[in-house]
Length: 349
Image (cartoon, rainbow, N blue to C red; front, side, top):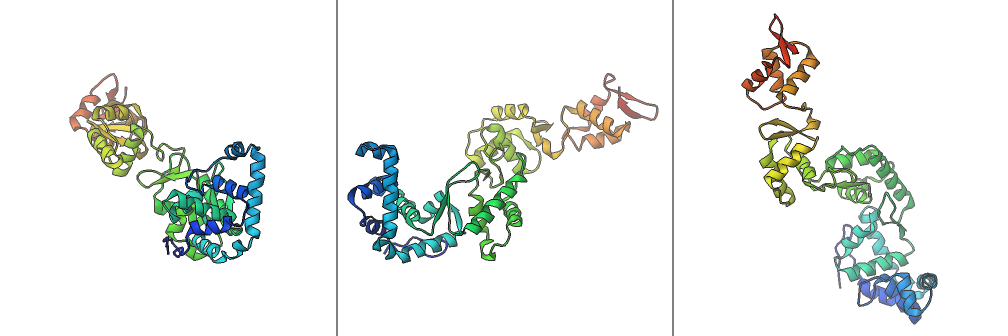
């Protein structure tokens, strides 16, 4: 007997045989409509109402009526009552996966074979215990059994992403912890990491980037599209300034993307998210580094702190730039930019 391993218990029935028994309760045309509509025949392709209507020379609305009639007929047939154990097992699977799960994930969990996925999907549609919510701008197609649990999960997801902005990137452990703060009155056995990951996967608003960090799908830090976005993720993962040659190597290593050194350097120069802090060394602007060349950094430091001695300026600049001390001193001697008072302190000219 076929066994499909699940998070809760193995399915001990053969979906194809169950579907065949259920369809056997229908007249030929109604049976053919369901087979075509749900991809239950030799081909797993699902036909549209319009395509089926053309085959029979009827309107798409008439096909919809036949489909609804066929589904209701199956639910009233003795064959349906004989499959109580089948539907009970499927309920157990959904409960074991968290009670609310994205359709695509549920089907992939039961089988990697498209034909069997179609059979499981059909059983979900026929089964009276299973409820489906169609995708919208916030969520994917999803299935559940308990209306109350579904509402709590959806509300928690909305609260979660309402607290995020495009610049936020959150580790998976942190996003799970944040989500759980928004879930109320949910059984402890549902608060495990694997279940929360499936709940997070219901959302079309948040997603995980290639490095496993979560954020809004509108953020380039999540849906990396170009070299600059990949470079940002590389620097963020590294956590400290890195040479552009190493950035290019890391892009190829982490993301499998071809990154020419010169191209990578040019992209870093153009993007305000990156700050050149030394010879070929780049940091992220979000780390607090001042923008501009050494001269600009000296000026900003003096404007912020007031007149400073040479030693104080050197010390502060070296926290912002990986340069030689002499480079700082040379810039300080520019009379058009800086002036020195009698106490040996420098100010902006």
